[in-house]
Image (cartoon, rainbow, N blue to C red; front, side):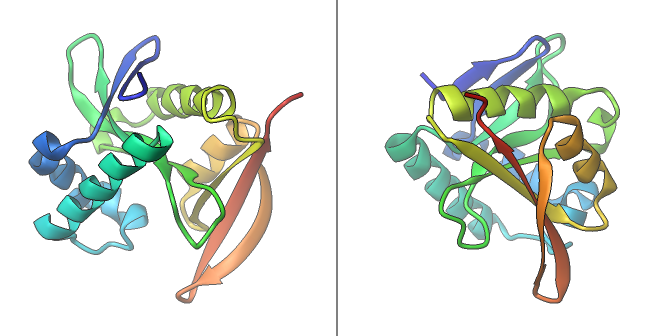
Length: 169
């Protein structure tokens, strides 16, 4: 049902234990971890823990993280999904692209699809996304998708921006 999603150019496939090494490679990529993992290299065990939580989230709540593949050549370009951060009451949108997939509209396409999924399938009334203040590309994407900056908060001495989009009634 929700473990595989398709957009015009992308196939989104739920991350499972079978993708442990692939997912780990994405997480430890210097380009990805710069903003997503506070530039820390996660261990394989930490990645395994993410996958276990991911599977539980899919089983119980119909959301999690999906690997992003191009439909044309089935190239892995990153991941996208919903995840709990900062003790928020519902999961936030997030994405990570590998360097060769930037500036091609993939993040816009995937996150737009997840916004629709969040409103229609998960029945959320609003969606949030956060990013490090210096992450200009994520800030631009949030604004492009119609998300509004609603808060700036220091988390571990780092400025984090919070964006929100409400479901249109």
